Structures are given as structure tokens and as C-alpha cells.
Image (cartoon, rainbow, N blue to C red):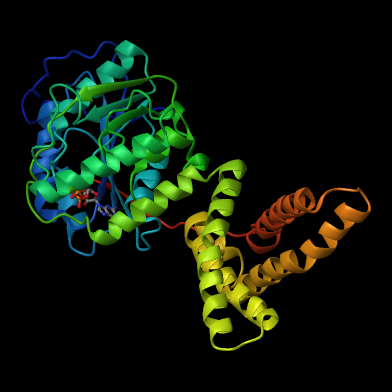
Length: 398
Ligand SMILES: Nc1nc2c(ncn2[C@@H]2O[C@H](COP(=O)(O)OP(=O)(O)O)[C@@H](O)[C@H]2O)c(=O)[nH]1
Ligand SMILES: [Mg+2]
């Protein structure tokens, strides 16, 4: 694909970084922005100063702002020696992660660098990220705060440092193999070869896009470059406690992406369902209810508990295929069918196949569990055909 590049020079010679680009590939810098108007000029100025003329570059902003950020970008782009594009989204599908995916889809260069729009990620590192990728023949180069030479100086306060550390540790513990060689999977600053990005595998929930990339598409070869996380130039962070929950759901979604992992999650959630079930049974029989109807009612508490956890942790991204009450009804039906089926199944195993009561019960439990899992996947959360979304309007600035 060809590219229109404006030759640099109008603003004076760009500063060439210490690390020379081995074999200059072109780079598309993707910058997600949400109300960053006060940072745009500074960011574009730093990029202009940092990227040498031999590294062809374009900048793609993916903007979900409600302020005048797009207008500011258009104005500032007039002084830039490289093409600047603004993809403004009226509907911010997928939040930050969705924005980055839009930017990567729009990128046309061999290399894509993703960085924040608030100058916390020093643009002076862009050439080094690309050069490192070329030199080491890596598909992904991560700017890391956690290797020698890097630091998180710009993380405001010990609380945020602790949260960031804890989240990194948890993430690395959950994906020891996939994240091998990535010390900073939470970094929002990285370079990736366009050929290593398969947009179909990206299902971001709006948080850590690098984690998503590393876990889902596993680029061949990963390198790291240290960087010092800077202070925000202007404006305020969009991170919040809500983003933290979003991140945990993101982790759960990634970890349970395979059917086997999902089945294990299903089993673990099912096991926790005994707590509300037994609690309800204890209260109901304590209140004088006969144990048979009490069993049936108490079981519904376990079912409701399981349904809530499964909806939020396992099938979050598949809920839209059916309406809530449709899902509730199907889920409850399957869960109760499980109970009804178990007794005749045990009888069958004992009388027909001569099994002992204990092994027959165990086998019946496993059988109905697998049937319930498969049934839940197929009958409650199976995608229906013919749904799509995504809107973005592209405007080339300058
Ligand atoms: N397009 C888009 N960008 C976002 C959104 N949320 C945050 N950003 C941008 O993502 C980058 C990082 O966000 P920031 O608030 O600085 O997070 P922090 O560095 O973790 O405090 C900044 O450039 C934000 O403008 C969003 O919903 N959509
Ligand atoms: Mg920031």
C-alpha cells in the first residue's frame, strides 16, 4: 500500500535520537484521546522533534472526546510534517480498547506504535521501539516501566503504584507462558508489526490492549525497551475504580476464552453455589418447611447465584444474543433438569450397569455437569447470526 508523506523540514531538522533506525520501516502512531485538548499541541510537537525524517510516520488519533479535542488536532496538524488523521467516534464502542483497535485497523504502515495522548509516554522513544523491533526481528516491542532503566515516576501516589504492581503480578500469574518476556503487560505504550495484528482476535473490553494482544494473537518474538512513565502534561486521568472492575472482568474473559478453561470456571462457580443453597435450606427448614419443598426452593437460590456469576464472569460478551428473561428461564430450566435427571441416571447406572451407589452418583454428577455446561453454552449463550456494530467517521486533518 502506498503512502503520502509530507517531507519534514519546514519546522527545522527533527532531532534524531541516539538509536538509529536499522532499516527504516514506516510507522503509524495510534493515539486514543478522550478530552485531551490541552495536551495535543505538546504531543504533536514532541513527535515532530523525535521522529527522524528517515522514519516515515503518520499519526492517527482515535477520539471519543466531548470537548474540542478534534478541532485542536486539526489546527495543530497544520504545523506537522507528517499526515495526521482524526477518527472521531460518536459512539465510543469498547471505550479505550475499542479506540485502539479502530486506530490499528486504520493504520497502513509496517509498524504501529500505540501511545497515550497526555505525554506520559515519551514520543522520543518511538524510533527506538521501531528500531529495536527491526534489529531483533520482533513482532512486538513493549515500552516497560519494570526493567532496568525504566520507572513509573509519573504514577501519582503510592496507592496507584500499589494497584499497578498488584495488577501486573496477578496478570503475570494468570498467564505465565503467554506473558513470558513481557515485564510490563499493563503498559499502554508499545510497537507492533501490522502483520502481527489480527483484528478479528481482538475483543477488547476497553482496558489493557497490550495484554489482549499478547494473550490472543501472540506475536512472534517480543522485545522490551525501558521507559520512564512521565507526569501528565495537562488535564486529568480517566482511570477510576470502575476501570479497575472492568480490568478484572477483562482478565476473567481472557482467562476463560477456551472451552476447557470456561468449563473449569463453570465448575468452580457451581461449587460456590452450594453456599447460598445450603444457607437457604437451613433457613427454610428452620422456619418449619418440609425438607422436600425446601430443597426445591433452596436450589433456586443456588441457581440464581450461579446465574449471576456466570453472566458476569464467563459469558459477559455473549449476553446480548438473548434477552435477560429468556436467559434466566433457559438457565433455570437446565439447572433444574439437572436435578430431575440425576436420580434416574443413578438408578440406571446401578441397576443396568451394576455400579456401586457411590461411583454411580459420582458418574451421574459428572455427566449432568457436562450436559449442563454444554447445554448452557448452546442453549443460553450461543451467538445468533446476523449482528454487527461499529461506527467511526474519518477525517484527514491538515
Ligand atoms: N478514545 C478514547 N481514549 C481514551 C478513553 N479513555 C481514556 N482515553 C485515552 O487513553 C489515554 C490514557 O488515559 P489516562 O486517563 O491518561 O489513563 P492513565 O494514564 O492510566 O491515568 C489518554 O490518551 C486518554 O485520553 C476512551 O474512552 N476513548
Ligand atoms: Mg495517562
